[in-house]
Image (cartoon, rainbow, N blue to C red):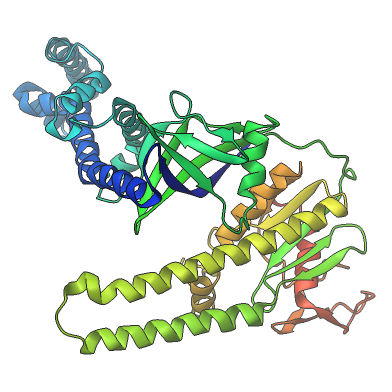
Length: 453
């Protein structure tokens, strides 16, 4: 099973109201949710944090426990004394736990839920939304607890604009009516799923969830309100497709600058160049120039407030983001289609952890521009879920020397230019011959056995 997320625009459809009236009614309700929901989430986090650290606070208030900790740190304390101190600390812990159970006999989750239900912010909000929010916040709190202790992240704070969670299985199962798909909401309201141009094949995915039952919709779903538009955020379970690949046949995918991607197999003539890196960079340069123009104009504008001045920049940023996502979907689809056609068993890609960094862990100068201009990680994730739908495994390999090693003899050579590789091994059949550097790297990736788990 592979999980993918989908974002689909939904249009309000209220029985007995016009399109404009339906929009007005739904937007008013969702703006009200948006104004209260993040406050409920923050209240829930603070309650969970307080109850989770109740024992630690009780230890700090116990003078004997604090004094025992201090004595353990003394170098003069003997091993026998340390054992006695530890034993006494365990006894104090047991006493404090008994007191804690009297103060809070129920699970911390139950207390935090009570606090939320009695909160004024949760009033007038559907219980389905509040219940789903509780589950989301509690899961995220527990998942991030270890990272908080290690100091790798701070306590989560929620802000206005967060997606509105709900359960897709209880009252809101998607239904097909007259060729359209609808999401039933509360009372007489429902939403029509608007697929638009559907470059991401969302209609096909929903068809497989509702009609053919090949895919499975996960219960957790969200609705996002953005610039007077509503979007349905769902997660879909996709089973591994049945295919008959050639055993041991591996496709290597080299992501680069000259070419967005170059693919080749480990044992065979199949290879292909995908996308146009130059056209991609030119388009992103157009966005960058427009950003600079807008930023310069903002310096000379006066009044109206920050939100008004930065609105044009945010709109342009959204357009660039959408364009990059579309390009990544197109490239990933072409890669997976080739893998299916070539009957590939596994797709291998370079791990991006530490990509472009030197031994000190700093990003090298010549990689900074590249990292800022190409969504490699997102492209890899797109390849992953499309490959899962096609029944093809995906794994990552160590990127060390894949572009500096000859794919024929396996010895280090010279990459004299960004797009040219020359083998320097006199015994190699490709000795002193110019090879396509991306092709050479793709074959090395396909042949690599250094898989990163």
